[in-house]
Image 1: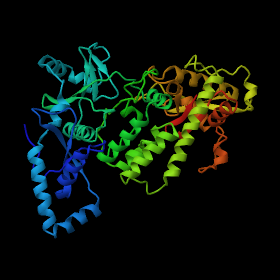
Image 2: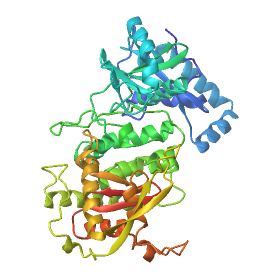
Image 3: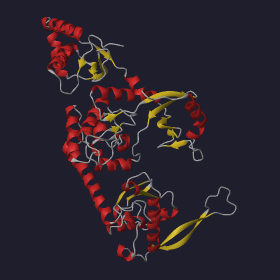
Image 4: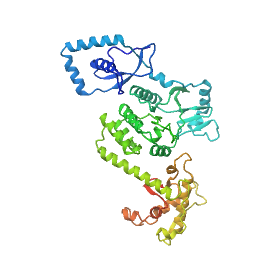
Length: 483
């Protein structure tokens, strides 16, 4: 049982302290100038010796400077050293092995290792369709076995770095008593020279849109929000998305503060990105919250730790997120009006196409590829033109939207089930609808001319008449639609 060193400062954390604890902490930290502190953890005493976890801290520069100046008096340091020695002779602390706590309960049998060894080629190549033992998760590097339902396995490049981050996360949660943040138990093991991670599996809703709905609709997240902001400030956790912090206590009738699982701690790059979002499209904590009170809590906690956004003010950050929340509420009202809450995959139906306000008789032509019989590579050698009206295109686009709605993930929320992509790369007809309406003799087109594209006109008309909620964005992949 390793003990806390004499010159390692002991802290009782941010929780309310007794007078004795406050005096002990003040005296003990007098010689602390930076580095790791020993944070006392309630309930971890062994043989009368309290447990503590070592975690990094950053003292304020002014306080550190004043301490250094006081050392020059000689008398004060001597008095404090004697007081520290007396208090340490009365109170002892042992170091809790955080890595050992992280690995608790993770038992990987030799039979499981051998099974993974046999299945690994299928797992890597995603050839698990016919194998009833493999359960695919979100990517080819994350999988589960039906014979070990309480674990998920991660076959990732930097397994050592991931586990180090999990140990760091566990240290911070223990040190700062962030009991609502659950770090999954995990352990490294080796298969054919490759390092894998076996990780505790939580019974949570997997799809990100389902988690977005929970964060929007459930109460009991205020203290959870504060703890998340503290955690981000202390660790630099930056990949803050709903999918990476699913709610564990997700029953609507649950009373009290809800726990969340931190299931992907690979990125600990920047507390600023973790709070406000940013690089690589990271959402950030603020944009995962759904009430003004929660946003204020997160901003206040971030400010307390000196985390600010150098580009926008807290008021602007808050206003931007409130706009997103209001948009979500408008979406819910849209669903109520259209009966979508009762049928998440309700098809788009326009009984009278003339109500869309389009010139349905407008003519265009499709380019139909034709392959010569002697073409060796099967590529189209020429195209024939087939006449089409805008009416035909409207009917086809509505059918493709309904088909896309039916193919979304079953685990998604209603919003997720109805968020679709009309991919102009995968459908030749959509490519044509994306071309028709543009001037043929121009390289660069204006925004006004772009709005005359058949596909854009059809979608905009469906939105304007209340058949679709909105056209979310258009990029190189196609048209992203919230139906």
